[in-house]
Length: 345
Image (tube, rainbow, N blue to C red; front, side):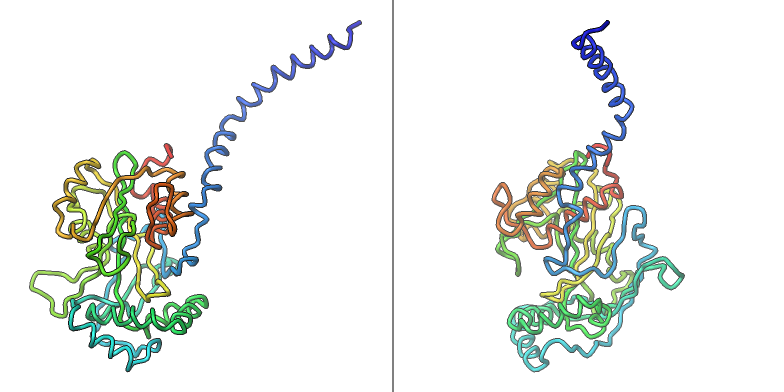
């Protein structure tokens, strides 16, 4: 007869032999679960841009990207009758600001969603009209001083009335933010200088640029659409040309409720090294807009730190633009589309 100790040893031996085999058989499932865990806990995908006042008009994915052939821009000379700012006060601000500020820009007055559920929604169509930069500043200053107007806009956005707002919007600009990845999986961070109009000293995820719209078309020159705006942004702010990076991906367009600005988020991956990119940037046309620039690791710990602490300072003390969390989220979402090796993340 076997004693109790012998039976216990026998059972323990069997269990000890079974567990490694069970773990080996389940290794792929365990690996996938361990790989998914950081994504669920780091808050990157869970970030809600509405919490910082950013409301989407249209979004795209790596499996359903926005292609240049699916982007349709129209230009109109007709302006909508805006219903959000007191016209007398707004005009006073525009006249006052026009003394020192100027420049031809575009503002959004209509759009049609790219949903691809029918031929009507097979492209993202948008209509812009010319305005002066001083008029955008007038809208910006008016909304800053009139919280009730900001609240009306936010209520309209919360109710999903973004298209209605576009057709009655006050003059404001269209701005693109291009997130830049390096070949060794770092992202470009830029600190804004004291020479810019807004967000002085804050860090952004890549460069920003405002859409220009001349009132007279020049011979042989097209009007600038969103993809061309991304190219100009990279050329003027970073000093790189299309042959220096992969295809531009545009993943998000929407409104900022507090400013009425239309924001576009795009992503590219560099073909040149981090060192060479910074060297190009040192001689870029708009270098004066940047106070500092660096490359940061594109890893979940860095991204989560910024998403959680962007306003008061991340682990290194950097304070970030309110657009930075969404820029990082979009870069994370679109990492496969910009040809980043997602299997190593």
